[in-house]
Image 1 (cartoon, rainbow, N blue to C red):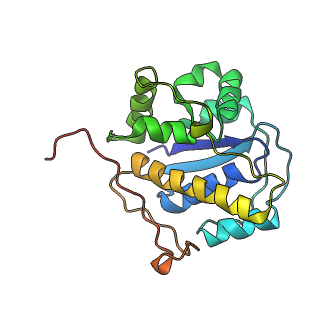
Image 2: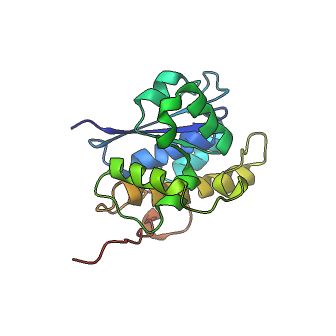
Length: 206
């Protein structure tokens, strides 16, 4: 079985998208999913100390990460592309217009998937795409997570917690059968256990 490929996109690929990549990779089975990230303005660089520390505290693996610039091939090979803001989604679509129906922001995809339960990750993407034209539009800010670049550590942590919350809901959408948790959550939860809220289903109970 081919692994389902998720691509996160932000600007520098140094803060938001690496946190999303590594946290999602920590809660989804490696055999079924391939999670990567890139940046619209990225240059090769490692994670800084602040992001690396916060990511580790939240249960992600901060080792061996190097930022990379977004390329058309990354978008073409991804089954789901998730920007951290709308400009990142739009950049991905410009690189690969045929990927429009699988490009969202992270929060947009979570919002569009609310109340659905898909049998496969591919079906989840198709359901979200079909609902995009049916649901009322929202302002750009609620669908995005702001860039903490250059901010104080507490702002970095706040943005990382926003990413984590969305990622755990995303994991429940893509893999609704599994129980998703992050080791060493770093937020005071017992044993670092951070479990995503279940995604409500529109299907009748069996």
